Amino acid sequence: ALGVVGVSCGVIASVVDIGTDWATDLKFGLCRRGFWINRATCCSDSTDMESCAQWRDWAEPGLASLLFYTLVAVGMAAYSAWIATLFPYVRGSGIPEAKVILGGFA
Image (cartoon, rainbow, N blue to C red; front, side, top):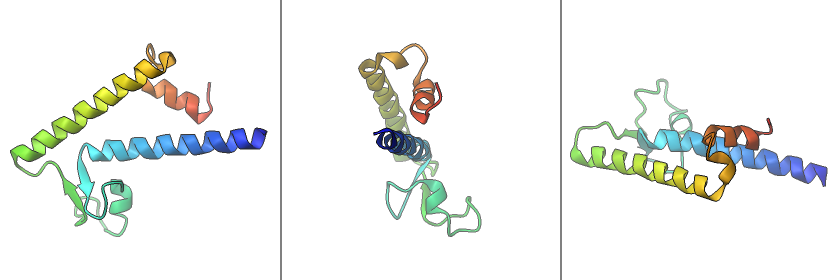
């Protein structure tokens, strides 16, 4: 039973870590191979992260890029607020402490 708890905590911590990396990269752009791929994985073939052909930056000029960046930022803020209403222990301290608790450090 203890092993199942340990593996479960490890899987949850990995999902949280990978998810936060992906969500952070989503604010700045998108991988052309798939929206679920973060920038480090998308550009692993490239010699330079800045000249990655598979990565599409939202910073390209245009109103659509600004609108999408704003929608993603507002969506992430709304999701964080929703999480805070579901789990009362993250209200006062914020999401980083929840990541630490899920990572196994109390």
